[in-house]
Length: 246
Ligand code: BEZ
Image: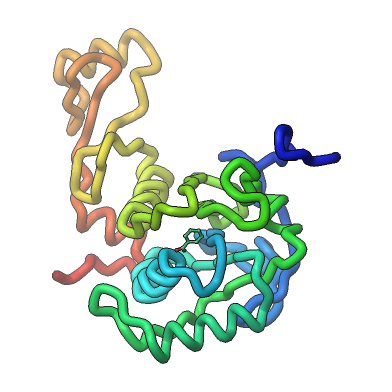
């Protein structure tokens, strides 16, 4: 396919529900075979535009500082940029030795950062958006489940640093939905009411509206919620099943 400025190459991207496209790659933590090496774990696979840039640096410090919080929900981090391995190593060393961000300092990035100079992986995942920049990846996030299926896709432009609390919320919400067979409404956080699947029959709709469905409250027959406490959620989805303290 040829690419011109007026008609950039249209590159596909994996969609929610698709299997994560497989690849092998060199990373700052050795070679990986993705997603096979992460079978049984959730993964946040994300791209950043370039090493030695300020927004990316703030993101890496934040991600690395939250790595244990993600691990507590069986979620591993894997980063990618189209820079080379030695640039990655030098940048991560500089971050640890010199950079502070919002009180975080001396931060060691121990999750793998993929080198992708050929852009092969970035193209496979639709991380290059030529209208934004044809030589850098945008800030893409793929949330991949333990079966290697893509469960959420979030994209940010080059100038906008990601919201990492939101990424953790997405992981918890997906795991809660899977475990309890519910859905999570707008701005949901653990402990907020969840929505239950719509009534599948007139009988169920009537039962719910008559207030006979135990633990379920309805605004209307199609909009019903129930309580799942934050402790129940933590016990179900947190590694080791212990409720969070504090
Ligand atoms: C940054 O990380 O600061 C950045 C990277 C690429 C373009 C613009 C900003």
